[in-house]
Image (cartoon, rainbow, N blue to C red):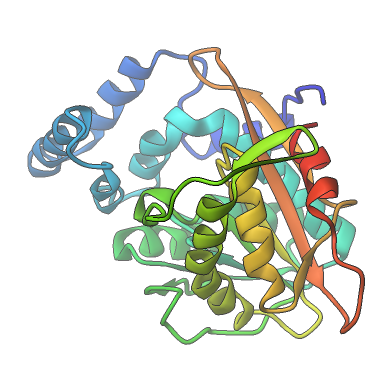
Length: 290
């Protein structure tokens, strides 16, 4: 699959303060300059602890207070953000959605992009960081919910539920069972690790389902580095009645700001009628390997 440049989303991100085509140190410098002294020291401490391997650095998401600061914080990941935004926008268009709910919406850039593409689409979102949901509310002109999407009651039932890197695999526990290596469609994976991860994904997917109408699909993108992760999400989705839609799913490919190639699945799951044929591991492995 060839790389795409995602010009529409890229222009949107640039117009909203993302710093592009520059070195990571310049991005960090611009972010630090945008912060008050207290938050500047705070994020420098977070970076130092993360760089020592003592933390995932997720606390940095609590720092931005403005859309500009959020844009600078996320600028390191702008090629990926542009790629997924274009893809989600295409999914919304192809499915003719009238309402979209984003799980882990962060500062709301994806929701704002969807509103720019289709102003008639109603958008909803939820994120655990109150500073980011305030920014998202300002960007979208909608009241974005603050809370844990696994436990918080939904604001609405929507035509499409999306999650764009709205979860962190660092929060999942590794399997304690012995590795059991299998291969399907040329893709190796550990069966036990995949099965145990599916059990951890289930509460997430079950919670996302509460934001959906009965006919609504789910669209997810994330850094699934091996087929076992895709299989885990696929099996968790089945438990709540969502089946992988191969015709709408794909593998996105970009080059990050350091010029290195990255690839990650962008997956759509649709409600599966009782007794319908399931997508096989072999079919999903072919997609993952494309």
